[in-house]
Structure formats: C-alpha cells, structure tokens
Length: 366
Image (cartoon, rainbow, N blue to C red; front, side, top):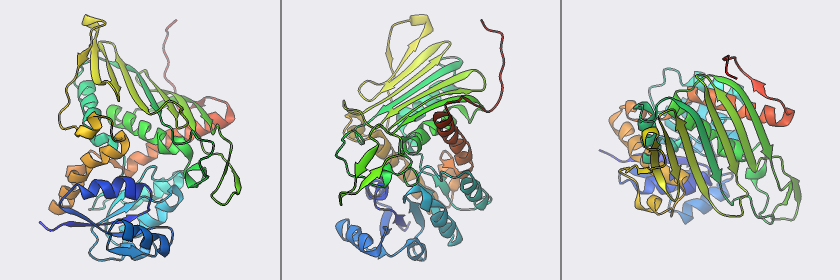
C-alpha cells in the first residue's frame, strides 16, 4: 500500500505529538506544515525536514496528495480549518477541545453527519493500553457497580513565575488546564461510562500567577486556569472528582482511582495498574498490561503525547483500507458536545460560585 500523506496545521502539539507519532510509522509521511505565518512554517519545515511549508491552512488543505489533515492550532482556529478540510474531502484529526464555543461544536458535528472519511477528536488516551484495560475491568464487572472515580493530574508547566506569556495563558486561545486537561478527563468518563447524564457539578478554577510578561517585556493579565477542580455527579449514582494542577512544584503525576462495590482499580505513573478486591481487602493484585512502550513503562515520556503512538497505526490502517471502523473507538464530533457541556459547567460554577444543576436523581439515604 502507498504511504498516507499528512499535513499538520500548528507547530506546537502538531510537532511534539503528531509529527513524532507519525515518524514511528513506516506507512505515514508528513509532507506539509502550516504555522501562524509563512516564515514560521518555513522555519519548522526546515528544522524537521518537512517538504512543504504552507502560508495558511487553505494552502495546506488544497494539496491534492494530502490524505489526512491534523488540526493542532489554538482552539479558536479549529472551526475554520476543520470546515475547509472537510470541504476538500480530507480525513481529519482535530485537537481537543473541538471548540470552546458550543455553537461551533454543534456546527462541526452537523457538518460531518454522513461523512465517509475520518473526522475525530484527538483524545488519544482512549488508545492507551492501561486506559483500555481499565475499561475492560469495568465492563467485565470485575469491581462490581462503580460509584466513585477520582482523577488527579499534576505538572510543572505553569509553575515558574518567569515563564513567558504565550497563547496557553490566554483564556480565549488556550483556556488553561480546564480545556487542556479536564477535556481529557471528561473524555475518559465518556469512554469508560458511555456519557452518563450529568446531574450536578461544582467547579473551581484559579490562574495562581495572575500576570506574566511576554518575551518583549509587556505584562499580560492571566485568566486561564492553572488549577481546575470539579465534583461531578452523574446518573446511576456515579460521583467523579477532578483535580488538575499545572503549577506543581514537585513534578508530574497522573493518578486514577475507581471504586466499585466489589473492588477498586488504582493507576499511577510509578505503580502502574493494580486492583484490590472486596473479598481480599488490603491485598494488591498487579494487573499486567501488554503492548506498552518501554519508555512509557519507565516514565520517560508523557502519557498524553506517548498515547498518540498507539493511535497512529489505527489511523493509517483505516485510511489505507478505507475501513473507518478501525478507528471507531475514537472520540467523534458528537462526543465533543457532551465534553464541552461539562467543561462549560465547570467554568460557570467556578465563576458564579454556585452548583450547576442539569438534572435530578433522588434517593432516600440518610
């Protein structure tokens, strides 16, 4: 089969995650890059040996031989790029969130109804072997009825007060960790529990460092979250807690705790995956997971960027064979509606100081 030709719109995640992931696949070839200007495109094209530097997303999508367009630009640019790529009948992967505007998400979801090619959101954690094993354990009833999930992620990216202002610190461009990380957490809940109805939600956001200087010494006020926390109550008595802090002084962590009435699943970067059973309280059972890259086992790569590598072979195979069911596990544009509903409710609750109520589920517990 011929190689799948790829164009990347964006020079941040597009380079760190997408380009590096496709480089590992012999049947994939990134042939074009588009940055915020032709000069920036040329700079990255030369640095990473990408044949074509494009002035804008339209020029990239107009390249006839490109099969797959990766939209990795800042959030507010997603709609225009996705619409044009669909118009040019390309396969499309768009970075999360699909948009931070509910009307734009709905527009894109409507746009791809009946679309015969790939149109997915890059929630790559769905393809991580540990995440897939967790779903298998949940679905098999191994821990019984799940009633509580706790998700914790910490990183040092926003910790330094001397870090220069960039679009990641801009609420309209990057959206902070609410859009960058809570979107991933929400997608995990969708994947594991099939988009259960939201009953109520209580959110908290804080930028911590409220002003930063850009490289030219100009001061910018920061409204994008460094900390995002949420208590989410879903139907069928499922309670979910998020805690995300991009300003950690300690280092990185990514922890998952899932409690069921017959057992408990635990995951951490250091200990990986284990399970505890109600009939053997206090005794840890290590869960062996196959197919994990060695550098991920040794925590030499982020679970987020590293997970894209598991996604890549499926994407390429689906395009080569014309069988889009190969990537049916992916988050689609319709899923993005549910995802943004929760993200918007976190913002509303955090800024209003109120619990956001979506539905009702009553009981008689005391």
